[in-house]
Image 1 (cartoon, rainbow, N blue to C red):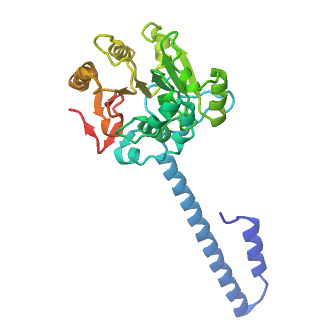
Image 2 (cartoon, rainbow, N blue to C red):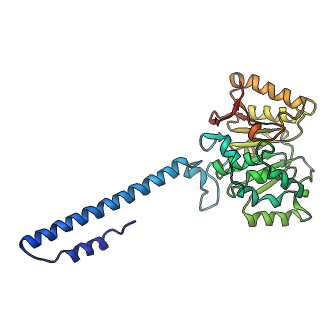
Image 3 (cartoon, rainbow, N blue to C red):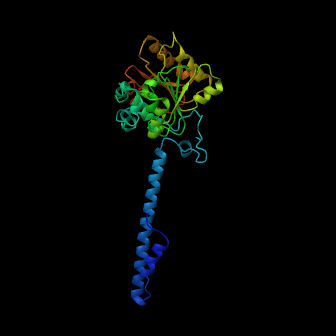
Length: 313
């Protein structure tokens, strides 16, 4: 930006040699011309800067209040709220062309065999979709991952390096140890901290916690559910979904493996048929940019916009 005040003033003074007659008038005309040019350039630069700043602000996924933690105590002003940080546009082409760098920097924190899965393209695996949502819209609120396994989804969701991820597994489960590759959990956490990814592990039964605790754990705009895949014979998914309805959840729920088996296909069809009118949500089939065995999205917020999507009726 061009300097103001003394610099401009001293330049004009250098031009202002006192003369009389036509010479003085000529110099004053040039002074005015130069000042006009300088003012014009300053105005253009300021205008351009303001425009660029406003463009950045308007295209940012969340407001300053939503993305910035309190500098005094490190807390997140919107932690615990359900609503998305902005309208969530899921653009199939952008997901397919998502930069792999966010996943590359966290891939060695999952199990060795799952590195290959994490890096597979959309339509084969859903990790790039999760990274897209996190990188494009993630704010200071935690995201929730239900079904830890080898931490792969949690890592994809935390790959923006500023959104914490709370991941939940069954009481007593130690499946995540395969992601540690022989290290202790403390050593693994140190590696994650050095990269900048913030993963918090929970082992508890989400169907048995109080409503207050359930709201706290689900107090975010995006939840990924990937557990038993047996909503009839082992109905965790079905009961978990009902708890979301009971607490009037207003965010987004990702469902993995909606085409995996007969029970999942049946349940997904039920959600499609009964959602919009009776329970106030919309369903979207994102399999083309998700997991080959099916990826669904349930939008409770009404703020999801799909570009080139296969929208359900």
